[in-house]
Length: 334
Image 1 (tube, rainbow, N blue to C red):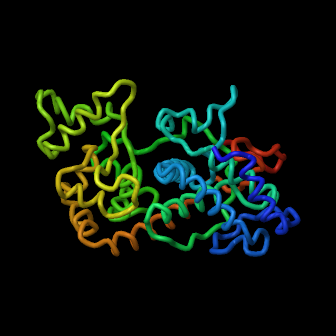
Image 2 (image 1 turned 120 degrees about the vertical axis):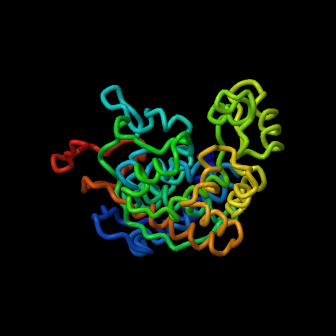
Image 3 (image 1 turned 90 degrees about the horizontal axis):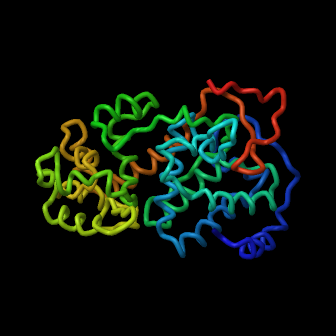
């Protein structure tokens, strides 16, 4: 976590931009939403993300993971950031959220923005902007990001329903991506975020040693990769492995090239290269870095535009808790 002392240096620099609080409305998203209400918002976000990335390259994967979990449950409304209470187990408490991290960085950014522009910048926008900036710092594409999201008023563990690595391509698409308006190529593009991802060994253990009870590795996996992963996964504790063994901290087409060489760590990832419905997209991105970068930027913007179907919202003062409710803010979570 970025120290509060370090943040003070940021805040002193930006203190001159202090503005009168003004709650944003549920207006349509647009690039430069904070131009008049908090003109230095995106600069402050970028500064804090740069500082973290300089000491922790894995933050890009963490933020991509965090934003995916946020947007695919109730839309991009920062509901994933809410802490659980005795009365309300939040999305954080759901089993799929167990490996999600990066909350502390969002807290640091919010702390800086509340000092400079209190009650202006939503936690949902902070998460989207921080993810965009971390992707660029990892060598990925830069892109204009519409802002103006509101923070949601509901966060429930029982509403978390995300694609699992054990699913087939068809199950993931028809059950999770297509209902949100994504095409198959867009699904493959978003899964390209695995280029900086990691997975716990227990998720793919069968592939490297006892596939389908055969006593042998998955024949779809490159034998050298299987041997390397067996060594990695023999470590004590809860070992993990990079999903892209080539450029593990870079947002690039390497992930797709590895899939064309049978070097997908997860069976689901490898199936993207083998399934007739998605293989052409994988091989296309493996050949063409420019095409991948353009498609990834567009898919990230589209994902960031997913909205909660319940309507309403707020700009939280603390990303981990809802503001004090008003009678007009009642939401039953349906």
